[in-house]
Image (cartoon, rainbow, N blue to C red; front, side, top):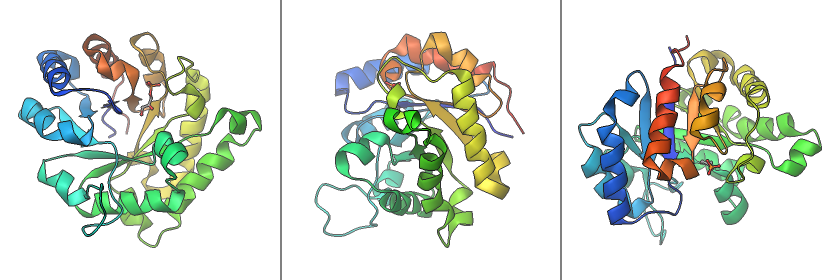
Amino acid sequence: MRKPLVVGNWKMHGSREMAKTLCAGIRAAGDAYIGVEVAVCPPYVLLPQVADSLRGSGIAWGAQDVSEHSAGAYTGEVSAGMLKDFDTRFVIVGHSERRALYGDTDVLTVGKLRQAATVGLVPILCVGETLEERRAGSTEAVVARQLDALLGAADAAQLLSSLVIAYEPVWAIGTGETATPDQAQAVHAFIRARLGATAADTRLLYGGSVKPGNAGELFAMPDIDGGLIGGAALKCEEFVAICHAARTRPGRS
Ligand code: 13P
């Protein structure tokens, strides 16, 4: 059974004050989360505070990145073990902003994913094509390449067992332009087919300009198990409404 999952990616936004207010608001809307798993991913420095604000609420927290190393002389990096120490449940790896702006490759992303899985975090692996790639008709080839770095790993079966995958078309991120439900469903079905044996249990999220107005129709698609939310995750009412939209989506088995 795939329980619907809605994850807020705050990106590089927030402050202690904002986190306090937003977490209190999200926590107060408890009824919206019945039957839905909900998590927020603040910047690293806000994780301890978000953890304190959400502990005991059933709402989880996650990080937006993690080192591919377990410990050592890696100035500026944060290890999976450190995240686990703050009871972090999820970690996003391979977000298109990491890939485009910080050179995160498919192989590096799998290294990060492996670190996360090793300590028992749930990695959220992001995949997705640029507008040029979509226009060139290479959406499936790009997503396949991003997945194959994982599927070809010797420990693929182990890594796949705890994984969440987010399909985030780069052209839909922060642009207000959303993939249509049919466009998103087609790529989600492609991903699920490529995953093989574990596919039926793996949650596939859609990300890219998800708003209260389009969440319901996206989440109603058979292979879309929830969302990875950027801008709308910073607005309490919008995020709660999106979580509510996931409730109407029955768990799929
Ligand atoms: P937006 O919802 O702002 O388009 O961002 C999506 C995203 O990148 C989530 O990781």
